[in-house]
Image (tube, rainbow, N blue to C red):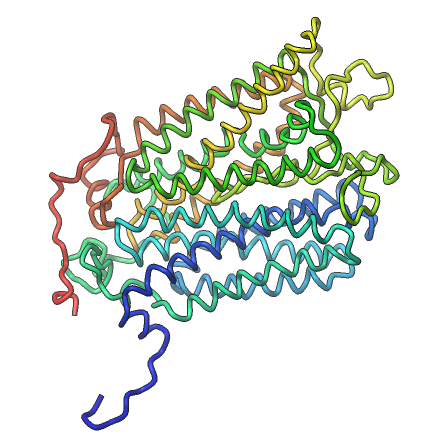
Length: 557
Protein backbone atom coordinates (compact mmCIF):
# COMPACT_ATOMS: atom_id res chain seq x y z
CA UNK A 1 0.00 0.00 0.00
CA UNK A 2 1.38 3.43 -1.01
CA UNK A 3 1.88 6.09 1.67
CA UNK A 4 -1.15 8.26 2.00
CA UNK A 5 -3.50 5.86 0.23
CA UNK A 6 -6.61 4.59 1.93
CA UNK A 7 -6.63 1.13 3.49
CA UNK A 8 -7.97 -1.34 0.91
CA UNK A 9 -10.80 -3.67 1.76
CA UNK A 10 -9.44 -6.93 3.08
CA UNK A 11 -10.65 -10.20 1.67
CA UNK A 12 -11.73 -13.08 3.85
CA UNK A 13 -8.51 -14.98 3.09
CA UNK A 14 -6.35 -11.98 4.02
CA UNK A 15 -8.35 -11.60 7.22
CA UNK A 16 -7.69 -15.20 8.22
CA UNK A 17 -4.01 -14.86 7.30
CA UNK A 18 -3.67 -11.58 9.19
CA UNK A 19 -5.42 -12.99 12.26
CA UNK A 20 -4.16 -16.54 12.88
CA UNK A 21 -6.51 -16.89 15.85
CA UNK A 22 -9.38 -17.19 13.32
CA UNK A 23 -7.73 -20.11 11.55
CA UNK A 24 -8.57 -22.78 14.13
CA UNK A 25 -12.27 -21.83 14.57
CA UNK A 26 -12.77 -21.70 10.81
CA UNK A 27 -11.04 -25.06 10.30
CA UNK A 28 -13.17 -26.50 13.10
CA UNK A 29 -16.35 -25.26 11.41
CA UNK A 30 -15.29 -26.74 8.06
CA UNK A 31 -14.57 -30.12 9.65
CA UNK A 32 -17.72 -30.17 11.80
CA UNK A 33 -20.11 -29.01 9.07
CA UNK A 34 -18.59 -31.42 6.56
CA UNK A 35 -19.19 -34.31 8.93
CA UNK A 36 -22.67 -33.05 9.74
CA UNK A 37 -23.60 -33.09 6.05
CA UNK A 38 -22.14 -36.58 5.60
CA UNK A 39 -23.97 -38.06 8.57
CA UNK A 40 -27.27 -36.41 7.66
CA UNK A 41 -27.23 -37.66 4.06
CA UNK A 42 -26.20 -41.13 5.20
CA UNK A 43 -29.08 -41.54 7.65
CA UNK A 44 -31.93 -39.46 6.26
CA UNK A 45 -33.10 -42.24 3.93
CA UNK A 46 -34.22 -44.33 6.92
CA UNK A 47 -37.04 -41.90 7.73
CA UNK A 48 -37.85 -41.02 4.13
CA UNK A 49 -37.98 -44.56 2.75
CA UNK A 50 -41.42 -45.54 4.03
CA UNK A 51 -43.22 -42.37 2.82
CA UNK A 52 -41.47 -42.82 -0.52
CA UNK A 53 -42.64 -46.43 -0.63
CA UNK A 54 -46.22 -45.34 -0.06
CA UNK A 55 -46.12 -42.37 -2.47
CA UNK A 56 -44.35 -44.13 -5.33
CA UNK A 57 -45.32 -47.76 -4.64
CA UNK A 58 -41.68 -48.88 -4.50
CA UNK A 59 -40.94 -52.60 -4.66
CA UNK A 60 -38.16 -54.31 -2.68
CA UNK A 61 -35.69 -54.03 -5.56
CA UNK A 62 -36.57 -50.37 -6.12
CA UNK A 63 -36.02 -49.59 -2.45
CA UNK A 64 -32.63 -51.33 -2.59
CA UNK A 65 -31.77 -49.31 -5.71
CA UNK A 66 -32.72 -46.07 -3.99
CA UNK A 67 -30.74 -46.85 -0.85
CA UNK A 68 -27.73 -48.27 -2.68
CA UNK A 69 -27.50 -45.39 -5.16
CA UNK A 70 -25.89 -43.22 -2.46
CA UNK A 71 -23.19 -45.85 -1.93
CA UNK A 72 -22.66 -46.16 -5.67
CA UNK A 73 -22.18 -42.42 -6.00
CA UNK A 74 -19.75 -42.46 -3.06
CA UNK A 75 -17.77 -45.29 -4.65
CA UNK A 76 -17.54 -43.38 -7.94
CA UNK A 77 -16.25 -40.31 -6.08
CA UNK A 78 -13.59 -42.37 -4.34
CA UNK A 79 -12.34 -43.58 -7.73
CA UNK A 80 -11.97 -40.14 -9.35
CA UNK A 81 -11.96 -37.82 -6.35
CA UNK A 82 -8.26 -38.17 -5.63
CA UNK A 83 -7.31 -36.71 -9.00
CA UNK A 84 -9.75 -33.82 -8.49
CA UNK A 85 -8.38 -33.09 -5.01
CA UNK A 86 -4.73 -33.11 -6.11
CA UNK A 87 -5.28 -31.27 -9.40
CA UNK A 88 -7.72 -28.54 -8.35
CA UNK A 89 -6.89 -28.28 -4.66
CA UNK A 90 -8.63 -29.26 -1.45
CA UNK A 91 -10.68 -26.07 -1.05
CA UNK A 92 -12.03 -26.12 -4.60
CA UNK A 93 -12.89 -29.79 -4.25
CA UNK A 94 -14.98 -29.08 -1.14
CA UNK A 95 -16.74 -26.13 -2.78
CA UNK A 96 -17.41 -28.20 -5.90
CA UNK A 97 -18.80 -31.06 -3.84
CA UNK A 98 -21.15 -28.63 -2.09
CA UNK A 99 -22.46 -27.47 -5.47
CA UNK A 100 -23.09 -31.09 -6.46
CA UNK A 101 -24.83 -31.67 -3.13
CA UNK A 102 -27.10 -28.67 -3.69
CA UNK A 103 -28.02 -30.03 -7.13
CA UNK A 104 -28.72 -33.46 -5.62
CA UNK A 105 -30.85 -31.97 -2.84
CA UNK A 106 -32.83 -30.00 -5.42
CA UNK A 107 -33.39 -33.16 -7.46
CA UNK A 108 -34.57 -35.07 -4.38
CA UNK A 109 -36.77 -32.29 -3.05
CA UNK A 110 -38.57 -31.80 -6.36
CA UNK A 111 -38.51 -35.42 -7.55
CA UNK A 112 -41.61 -36.74 -9.23
CA UNK A 113 -40.33 -40.16 -10.22
CA UNK A 114 -37.93 -42.87 -9.08
CA UNK A 115 -35.40 -41.84 -11.72
CA UNK A 116 -35.05 -38.34 -10.25
CA UNK A 117 -34.76 -39.81 -6.76
CA UNK A 118 -31.95 -42.14 -7.82
CA UNK A 119 -30.19 -39.32 -9.67
CA UNK A 120 -30.37 -37.10 -6.61
CA UNK A 121 -29.05 -39.87 -4.35
CA UNK A 122 -26.17 -40.54 -6.77
CA UNK A 123 -25.23 -36.85 -6.71
CA UNK A 124 -25.48 -36.71 -2.91
CA UNK A 125 -23.31 -39.81 -2.51
CA UNK A 126 -20.69 -38.43 -4.89
CA UNK A 127 -20.67 -35.11 -3.05
CA UNK A 128 -20.34 -36.41 0.51
CA UNK A 129 -17.62 -38.89 -0.45
CA UNK A 130 -15.54 -36.24 -2.24
CA UNK A 131 -16.08 -33.75 0.57
CA UNK A 132 -15.15 -36.26 3.27
CA UNK A 133 -11.77 -36.93 1.66
CA UNK A 134 -11.00 -33.29 0.90
CA UNK A 135 -12.06 -32.03 4.36
CA UNK A 136 -9.77 -34.38 6.29
CA UNK A 137 -6.78 -33.60 4.06
CA UNK A 138 -7.46 -29.84 3.97
CA UNK A 139 -7.77 -29.44 7.73
CA UNK A 140 -4.78 -31.69 8.49
CA UNK A 141 -2.56 -29.55 6.25
CA UNK A 142 -3.71 -26.17 7.56
CA UNK A 143 -3.17 -26.75 11.29
CA UNK A 144 -0.20 -27.75 13.39
CA UNK A 145 0.47 -31.21 14.87
CA UNK A 146 -0.95 -30.28 18.30
CA UNK A 147 -4.36 -29.40 16.86
CA UNK A 148 -4.54 -31.83 13.93
CA UNK A 149 -5.89 -34.79 15.86
CA UNK A 150 -8.74 -32.87 17.48
CA UNK A 151 -9.81 -30.99 14.35
CA UNK A 152 -9.76 -33.99 12.01
CA UNK A 153 -11.59 -36.09 14.62
CA UNK A 154 -14.17 -33.32 14.80
CA UNK A 155 -15.32 -34.50 11.37
CA UNK A 156 -16.39 -37.84 12.87
CA UNK A 157 -18.18 -36.00 15.66
CA UNK A 158 -20.04 -34.07 12.99
CA UNK A 159 -21.01 -37.34 11.31
CA UNK A 160 -22.60 -38.71 14.47
CA UNK A 161 -24.32 -35.38 15.15
CA UNK A 162 -25.64 -35.41 11.58
CA UNK A 163 -27.11 -38.87 12.11
CA UNK A 164 -28.89 -37.67 15.26
CA UNK A 165 -30.14 -34.58 13.45
CA UNK A 166 -31.53 -36.65 10.60
CA UNK A 167 -33.47 -38.89 12.97
CA UNK A 168 -34.82 -35.90 14.87
CA UNK A 169 -36.08 -34.29 11.67
CA UNK A 170 -37.44 -37.60 10.42
CA UNK A 171 -39.37 -37.92 13.67
CA UNK A 172 -40.68 -34.36 13.47
CA UNK A 173 -41.65 -34.54 9.78
CA UNK A 174 -43.09 -38.06 9.84
CA UNK A 175 -46.70 -36.85 9.65
CA UNK A 176 -46.17 -33.73 7.54
CA UNK A 177 -47.52 -33.68 3.97
CA UNK A 178 -44.67 -34.48 1.60
CA UNK A 179 -42.41 -34.58 4.63
CA UNK A 180 -39.74 -36.58 2.78
CA UNK A 181 -39.13 -33.60 0.48
CA UNK A 182 -38.24 -31.44 3.49
CA UNK A 183 -36.05 -34.22 4.92
CA UNK A 184 -33.89 -34.30 1.78
CA UNK A 185 -33.83 -30.52 1.33
CA UNK A 186 -32.44 -29.73 4.79
CA UNK A 187 -29.13 -31.36 3.83
CA UNK A 188 -28.26 -28.18 1.91
CA UNK A 189 -28.12 -26.07 5.09
CA UNK A 190 -24.81 -27.32 6.60
CA UNK A 191 -23.25 -27.43 3.12
CA UNK A 192 -24.05 -23.74 2.58
CA UNK A 193 -22.65 -22.81 5.99
CA UNK A 194 -19.47 -24.76 5.26
CA UNK A 195 -19.05 -22.92 1.96
CA UNK A 196 -19.27 -19.60 3.80
CA UNK A 197 -16.54 -20.71 6.22
CA UNK A 198 -14.31 -21.71 3.33
CA UNK A 199 -14.47 -18.20 1.86
CA UNK A 200 -12.41 -16.96 4.83
CA UNK A 201 -9.74 -19.66 4.56
CA UNK A 202 -6.72 -19.91 2.24
CA UNK A 203 -6.71 -22.34 -0.67
CA UNK A 204 -3.84 -24.34 0.79
CA UNK A 205 -0.78 -24.38 2.96
CA UNK A 206 1.14 -22.08 0.65
CA UNK A 207 -1.20 -19.22 1.69
CA UNK A 208 -1.40 -20.10 5.36
CA UNK A 209 0.42 -17.99 7.97
CA UNK A 210 3.02 -20.31 9.36
CA UNK A 211 2.57 -20.98 13.08
CA UNK A 212 5.64 -21.74 15.11
CA UNK A 213 4.90 -25.45 15.28
CA UNK A 214 3.86 -25.89 11.60
CA UNK A 215 6.30 -26.98 8.91
CA UNK A 216 5.16 -25.54 5.55
CA UNK A 217 4.53 -28.24 2.99
CA UNK A 218 5.15 -26.08 -0.07
CA UNK A 219 7.40 -23.28 -1.20
CA UNK A 220 10.57 -24.43 0.58
CA UNK A 221 13.27 -26.11 -1.46
CA UNK A 222 14.70 -27.86 1.56
CA UNK A 223 11.34 -29.35 2.59
CA UNK A 224 10.76 -32.99 1.85
CA UNK A 225 7.19 -32.10 0.90
CA UNK A 226 8.01 -29.10 -1.24
CA UNK A 227 7.22 -28.40 -4.86
CA UNK A 228 10.57 -29.73 -6.08
CA UNK A 229 9.28 -33.32 -6.07
CA UNK A 230 8.42 -34.92 -9.41
CA UNK A 231 4.78 -35.33 -10.30
CA UNK A 232 3.39 -38.53 -8.77
CA UNK A 233 0.92 -41.06 -10.11
CA UNK A 234 -1.28 -43.69 -8.52
CA UNK A 235 1.31 -46.38 -9.35
CA UNK A 236 3.70 -44.71 -6.90
CA UNK A 237 1.57 -46.12 -4.07
CA UNK A 238 3.00 -49.59 -4.80
CA UNK A 239 6.65 -48.66 -5.24
CA UNK A 240 9.42 -49.15 -2.74
CA UNK A 241 10.57 -45.53 -3.09
CA UNK A 242 10.00 -43.62 0.16
CA UNK A 243 8.37 -46.78 1.57
CA UNK A 244 5.12 -46.10 -0.30
CA UNK A 245 4.25 -49.80 -0.10
CA UNK A 246 4.38 -49.66 3.66
CA UNK A 247 2.16 -46.58 3.78
CA UNK A 248 -0.34 -48.19 1.40
CA UNK A 249 -0.37 -51.37 3.49
CA UNK A 250 -1.21 -49.32 6.59
CA UNK A 251 -3.96 -47.37 4.83
CA UNK A 252 -5.63 -50.35 3.16
CA UNK A 253 -5.38 -52.48 6.28
CA UNK A 254 -7.14 -49.90 8.43
CA UNK A 255 -10.07 -49.30 6.06
CA UNK A 256 -10.59 -53.00 5.28
CA UNK A 257 -10.46 -54.19 8.89
CA UNK A 258 -12.78 -51.30 9.81
CA UNK A 259 -15.46 -52.88 7.62
CA UNK A 260 -14.66 -56.59 8.08
CA UNK A 261 -15.45 -56.30 11.77
CA UNK A 262 -19.08 -56.10 10.62
CA UNK A 263 -19.93 -52.88 12.42
CA UNK A 264 -22.71 -51.77 10.01
CA UNK A 265 -24.35 -55.19 10.24
CA UNK A 266 -24.12 -55.45 14.03
CA UNK A 267 -25.99 -52.15 14.31
CA UNK A 268 -28.77 -53.67 12.22
CA UNK A 269 -29.76 -55.73 15.28
CA UNK A 270 -29.93 -52.76 17.63
CA UNK A 271 -33.73 -52.49 17.53
CA UNK A 272 -34.08 -56.24 18.10
CA UNK A 273 -31.87 -56.09 21.17
CA UNK A 274 -33.69 -53.03 22.54
CA UNK A 275 -37.03 -54.77 22.08
CA UNK A 276 -35.69 -57.89 23.76
CA UNK A 277 -34.89 -56.03 26.99
CA UNK A 278 -38.46 -54.72 27.19
CA UNK A 279 -38.73 -51.63 24.98
CA UNK A 280 -41.69 -52.35 22.71
CA UNK A 281 -43.23 -50.72 19.66
CA UNK A 282 -42.27 -47.17 18.78
CA UNK A 283 -40.18 -46.61 21.89
CA UNK A 284 -37.83 -49.39 20.75
CA UNK A 285 -37.10 -47.64 17.47
CA UNK A 286 -36.62 -44.23 19.11
CA UNK A 287 -34.23 -45.59 21.74
CA UNK A 288 -32.33 -47.67 19.20
CA UNK A 289 -31.69 -44.65 17.00
CA UNK A 290 -31.37 -41.72 19.41
CA UNK A 291 -29.87 -43.75 22.27
CA UNK A 292 -27.14 -45.36 20.21
CA UNK A 293 -26.56 -42.09 18.37
CA UNK A 294 -25.97 -40.32 21.67
CA UNK A 295 -23.52 -43.05 22.70
CA UNK A 296 -21.64 -42.58 19.42
CA UNK A 297 -21.44 -38.82 19.93
CA UNK A 298 -20.11 -39.17 23.48
CA UNK A 299 -17.54 -41.77 22.41
CA UNK A 300 -16.37 -39.59 19.51
CA UNK A 301 -16.01 -36.59 21.81
CA UNK A 302 -13.94 -38.77 24.13
CA UNK A 303 -11.70 -39.70 21.20
CA UNK A 304 -11.24 -36.02 20.37
CA UNK A 305 -9.95 -35.40 23.88
CA UNK A 306 -7.59 -38.37 23.87
CA UNK A 307 -6.30 -38.58 20.30
CA UNK A 308 -3.51 -36.02 20.89
CA UNK A 309 -2.79 -37.28 24.41
CA UNK A 310 -3.01 -41.05 24.33
CA UNK A 311 -2.20 -41.16 20.62
CA UNK A 312 -3.69 -42.67 17.47
CA UNK A 313 -2.16 -46.10 17.94
CA UNK A 314 -3.38 -46.46 21.54
CA UNK A 315 -6.97 -45.58 20.60
CA UNK A 316 -6.93 -48.01 17.68
CA UNK A 317 -5.61 -50.85 19.85
CA UNK A 318 -8.06 -50.20 22.69
CA UNK A 319 -11.03 -49.75 20.36
CA UNK A 320 -10.29 -52.88 18.32
CA UNK A 321 -9.82 -55.00 21.46
CA UNK A 322 -13.15 -53.84 22.92
CA UNK A 323 -14.87 -54.48 19.58
CA UNK A 324 -13.56 -58.03 19.52
CA UNK A 325 -14.79 -58.72 23.05
CA UNK A 326 -18.20 -57.07 22.65
CA UNK A 327 -19.19 -58.53 19.27
CA UNK A 328 -18.10 -61.97 20.48
CA UNK A 329 -20.27 -61.42 23.53
CA UNK A 330 -23.29 -60.69 21.32
CA UNK A 331 -22.58 -63.89 19.41
CA UNK A 332 -22.39 -65.97 22.60
CA UNK A 333 -25.61 -64.45 23.95
CA UNK A 334 -27.44 -65.16 20.71
CA UNK A 335 -26.63 -68.87 21.13
CA UNK A 336 -28.95 -68.93 24.13
CA UNK A 337 -31.44 -66.26 23.01
CA UNK A 338 -31.86 -66.33 19.20
CA UNK A 339 -32.88 -63.14 17.43
CA UNK A 340 -34.97 -63.31 14.25
CA UNK A 341 -34.68 -60.97 11.30
CA UNK A 342 -35.83 -60.52 7.74
CA UNK A 343 -36.34 -57.98 5.02
CA UNK A 344 -38.96 -55.42 5.97
CA UNK A 345 -40.17 -54.84 2.41
CA UNK A 346 -42.04 -58.15 2.77
CA UNK A 347 -44.34 -56.41 5.24
CA UNK A 348 -47.76 -55.55 3.84
CA UNK A 349 -48.86 -51.89 3.84
CA UNK A 350 -51.66 -52.52 6.37
CA UNK A 351 -49.32 -53.98 8.96
CA UNK A 352 -49.67 -53.17 12.63
CA UNK A 353 -49.25 -49.46 13.15
CA UNK A 354 -46.83 -47.75 15.45
CA UNK A 355 -48.37 -46.30 18.57
CA UNK A 356 -47.33 -43.38 20.69
CA UNK A 357 -45.71 -41.38 17.87
CA UNK A 358 -46.95 -37.89 16.98
CA UNK A 359 -48.28 -37.53 13.48
CA UNK A 360 -48.83 -41.27 13.13
CA UNK A 361 -49.77 -41.86 9.52
CA UNK A 362 -50.00 -45.59 9.49
CA UNK A 363 -46.37 -46.62 9.56
CA UNK A 364 -45.92 -50.39 9.59
CA UNK A 365 -44.31 -51.67 12.72
CA UNK A 366 -41.80 -53.61 10.67
CA UNK A 367 -40.65 -50.37 9.04
CA UNK A 368 -39.69 -48.61 12.25
CA UNK A 369 -36.67 -46.31 11.89
CA UNK A 370 -33.47 -48.32 12.31
CA UNK A 371 -30.47 -47.54 14.49
CA UNK A 372 -27.95 -45.01 13.22
CA UNK A 373 -25.80 -46.32 10.38
CA UNK A 374 -22.02 -46.48 10.74
CA UNK A 375 -19.85 -43.60 9.65
CA UNK A 376 -16.93 -42.47 7.52
CA UNK A 377 -15.56 -41.69 8.28
CA UNK A 378 -17.72 -44.84 8.76
CA UNK A 379 -19.37 -45.10 6.38
CA UNK A 380 -21.93 -47.82 6.76
CA UNK A 381 -24.57 -49.16 4.50
CA UNK A 382 -28.05 -48.05 5.56
CA UNK A 383 -29.72 -50.57 3.27
CA UNK A 384 -29.66 -53.28 5.88
CA UNK A 385 -30.55 -50.83 8.59
CA UNK A 386 -33.60 -49.73 6.67
CA UNK A 387 -34.58 -53.27 5.86
CA UNK A 388 -34.57 -54.77 9.29
CA UNK A 389 -37.68 -56.43 10.66
CA UNK A 390 -38.27 -56.23 14.38
CA UNK A 391 -39.73 -59.48 15.64
CA UNK A 392 -40.15 -60.81 19.15
CA UNK A 393 -37.55 -63.51 19.81
CA UNK A 394 -37.45 -66.40 19.48
CA UNK A 395 -40.68 -67.08 17.53
CA UNK A 396 -39.09 -69.90 15.57
CA UNK A 397 -41.99 -72.24 16.05
CA UNK A 398 -44.65 -69.95 14.65
CA UNK A 399 -46.12 -71.77 11.63
CA UNK A 400 -47.34 -68.48 10.14
CA UNK A 401 -43.86 -66.97 9.97
CA UNK A 402 -42.33 -66.65 6.49
CA UNK A 403 -39.79 -69.35 5.60
CA UNK A 404 -37.03 -66.75 5.19
CA UNK A 405 -37.46 -65.64 8.79
CA UNK A 406 -37.37 -69.18 10.08
CA UNK A 407 -34.21 -69.89 8.18
CA UNK A 408 -32.46 -66.96 9.84
CA UNK A 409 -33.39 -68.05 13.36
CA UNK A 410 -31.06 -70.70 14.74
CA UNK A 411 -32.89 -73.21 16.87
CA UNK A 412 -32.28 -73.34 20.59
CA UNK A 413 -32.90 -76.81 22.03
CA UNK A 414 -33.23 -75.63 25.62
CA UNK A 415 -34.36 -72.01 26.00
CA UNK A 416 -33.27 -70.37 29.27
CA UNK A 417 -35.67 -69.53 32.04
CA UNK A 418 -37.28 -66.08 32.22
CA UNK A 419 -34.78 -64.50 34.70
CA UNK A 420 -31.82 -65.89 32.78
CA UNK A 421 -33.29 -64.69 29.50
CA UNK A 422 -33.73 -61.15 30.85
CA UNK A 423 -30.13 -61.18 32.11
CA UNK A 424 -28.86 -62.35 28.72
CA UNK A 425 -30.88 -59.67 26.95
CA UNK A 426 -29.32 -56.96 29.08
CA UNK A 427 -25.87 -58.49 28.53
CA UNK A 428 -26.45 -58.25 24.77
CA UNK A 429 -27.48 -54.60 25.19
CA UNK A 430 -24.31 -53.81 27.17
CA UNK A 431 -22.19 -55.55 24.53
CA UNK A 432 -23.90 -53.53 21.83
CA UNK A 433 -23.22 -50.25 23.65
CA UNK A 434 -19.57 -51.20 24.17
CA UNK A 435 -19.23 -52.15 20.50
CA UNK A 436 -20.66 -48.85 19.30
CA UNK A 437 -18.48 -46.88 21.72
CA UNK A 438 -15.33 -48.80 20.81
CA UNK A 439 -15.78 -48.16 17.10
CA UNK A 440 -16.56 -44.49 17.68
CA UNK A 441 -13.33 -43.74 19.57
CA UNK A 442 -11.15 -46.17 17.61
CA UNK A 443 -11.64 -47.06 13.96
CA UNK A 444 -14.28 -44.37 13.38
CA UNK A 445 -12.25 -41.15 13.74
CA UNK A 446 -8.65 -42.40 13.90
CA UNK A 447 -8.59 -44.27 10.57
CA UNK A 448 -9.21 -41.11 8.57
CA UNK A 449 -6.84 -39.09 10.72
CA UNK A 450 -3.99 -41.55 10.05
CA UNK A 451 -4.78 -41.61 6.32
CA UNK A 452 -4.55 -37.81 6.18
CA UNK A 453 -1.09 -37.92 7.80
CA UNK A 454 0.94 -40.75 6.29
CA UNK A 455 1.15 -39.80 2.60
CA UNK A 456 3.28 -37.10 0.89
CA UNK A 457 1.42 -33.93 -0.04
CA UNK A 458 1.60 -34.30 -3.82
CA UNK A 459 -0.13 -37.69 -3.79
CA UNK A 460 -2.16 -37.39 -0.60
CA UNK A 461 -5.49 -36.81 -2.36
CA UNK A 462 -5.18 -39.78 -4.70
CA UNK A 463 -3.87 -42.05 -1.95
CA UNK A 464 -6.73 -41.09 0.37
CA UNK A 465 -9.25 -41.70 -2.42
CA UNK A 466 -7.67 -45.04 -3.29
CA UNK A 467 -8.02 -46.29 0.28
CA UNK A 468 -11.51 -44.81 0.50
CA UNK A 469 -12.60 -46.78 -2.57
CA UNK A 470 -11.57 -49.99 -0.80
CA UNK A 471 -13.53 -48.81 2.23
CA UNK A 472 -16.75 -48.44 0.22
CA UNK A 473 -16.16 -51.64 -1.76
CA UNK A 474 -15.53 -53.74 1.35
CA UNK A 475 -18.55 -52.13 3.00
CA UNK A 476 -20.73 -53.22 0.08
CA UNK A 477 -19.24 -56.72 0.14
CA UNK A 478 -19.76 -57.21 3.87
CA UNK A 479 -23.28 -55.79 3.79
CA UNK A 480 -24.47 -57.72 0.75
CA UNK A 481 -23.13 -61.01 2.10
CA UNK A 482 -24.65 -60.54 5.57
CA UNK A 483 -27.94 -62.40 5.11
CA UNK A 484 -26.30 -65.18 3.09
CA UNK A 485 -23.69 -65.58 5.83
CA UNK A 486 -26.40 -65.82 8.50
CA UNK A 487 -28.28 -68.41 6.44
CA UNK A 488 -25.12 -70.50 6.04
CA UNK A 489 -23.48 -70.45 9.49
CA UNK A 490 -26.12 -68.79 11.70
CA UNK A 491 -26.29 -65.45 13.48
CA UNK A 492 -24.16 -66.48 16.46
CA UNK A 493 -21.28 -67.79 14.38
CA UNK A 494 -21.48 -64.69 12.16
CA UNK A 495 -20.91 -62.44 15.16
CA UNK A 496 -18.11 -64.69 16.40
CA UNK A 497 -16.51 -64.48 12.96
CA UNK A 498 -16.61 -60.70 13.24
CA UNK A 499 -14.93 -61.04 16.63
CA UNK A 500 -12.15 -63.14 15.10
CA UNK A 501 -11.67 -60.53 12.39
CA UNK A 502 -11.35 -57.84 15.06
CA UNK A 503 -8.61 -59.92 16.74
CA UNK A 504 -6.75 -60.10 13.42
CA UNK A 505 -7.19 -56.35 13.06
CA UNK A 506 -5.73 -55.87 16.53
CA UNK A 507 -2.64 -57.79 15.47
CA UNK A 508 -2.35 -55.75 12.29
CA UNK A 509 -2.47 -52.47 14.21
CA UNK A 510 0.11 -53.67 16.73
CA UNK A 511 2.58 -54.73 14.03
CA UNK A 512 2.15 -52.20 11.23
CA UNK A 513 0.65 -48.92 12.50
CA UNK A 514 3.15 -46.46 14.05
CA UNK A 515 2.35 -43.65 16.45
CA UNK A 516 2.11 -40.23 14.78
CA UNK A 517 0.85 -37.99 17.59
CA UNK A 518 2.71 -34.73 18.17
CA UNK A 519 4.61 -34.95 14.87
CA UNK A 520 4.41 -32.59 11.93
CA UNK A 521 3.52 -33.95 8.50
CA UNK A 522 7.16 -33.57 7.46
CA UNK A 523 8.30 -35.61 10.48
CA UNK A 524 5.75 -38.34 9.75
CA UNK A 525 6.93 -38.46 6.14
CA UNK A 526 10.53 -38.94 7.25
CA UNK A 527 9.42 -41.53 9.81
CA UNK A 528 7.97 -43.72 7.07
CA UNK A 529 10.96 -43.17 4.78
CA UNK A 530 13.33 -44.47 7.46
CA UNK A 531 11.21 -47.54 8.25
CA UNK A 532 10.85 -50.50 5.98
CA UNK A 533 7.31 -51.90 5.81
CA UNK A 534 6.33 -49.68 8.75
CA UNK A 535 6.82 -52.34 11.43
CA UNK A 536 5.97 -51.13 14.91
CA UNK A 537 6.52 -53.64 17.69
CA UNK A 538 6.98 -51.16 20.51
CA UNK A 539 4.18 -49.52 22.45
CA UNK A 540 4.91 -46.13 20.91
CA UNK A 541 7.18 -44.42 18.40
CA UNK A 542 9.60 -41.65 19.20
CA UNK A 543 10.77 -39.06 16.71
CA UNK A 544 13.74 -37.97 18.82
CA UNK A 545 16.25 -39.60 16.47
CA UNK A 546 14.67 -38.38 13.23
CA UNK A 547 16.69 -35.60 11.59
CA UNK A 548 14.58 -32.81 10.13
CA UNK A 549 14.87 -29.13 9.39
CA UNK A 550 12.21 -26.87 10.83
CA UNK A 551 11.43 -24.07 8.44
CA UNK A 552 11.12 -20.71 10.18
CA UNK A 553 8.64 -18.07 9.12
CA UNK A 554 11.40 -15.78 7.85
CA UNK A 555 12.86 -18.52 5.67
CA UNK A 556 9.53 -19.18 3.96
CA UNK A 557 8.96 -15.58 2.94
